[in-house]
Image (cartoon, rainbow, N blue to C red; front, side, top):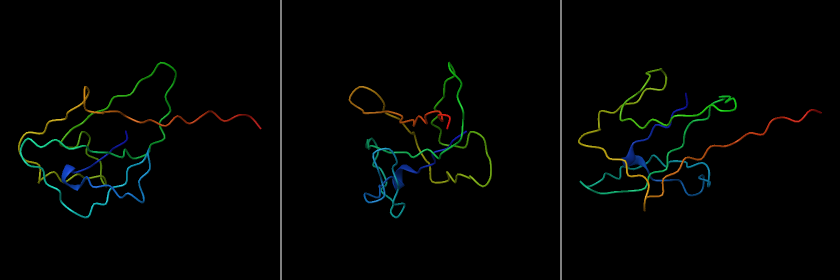
Length: 107
């Protein structure tokens, strides 16, 4: 299981450290949302060494709380209040970038 914890109020990216495939958060300021405000959010999912066989798939879960609690990856969601809405598709550019690591060639 790979995780991508983020507080949307801490969504500001570090422009020098971020790349097209790896967003890096500044994590230095709170940009709180106003009710009804829609903002883009880039979420870096922590690397994992998962092997997928042909025909297997993945599942992306977006949740305001931990799905499987596992220290030391604790998520403090005490600041989450109200209704959270994820906008995806249509005029909202939503995508998941997954790197493909090629098989090693002998030699």
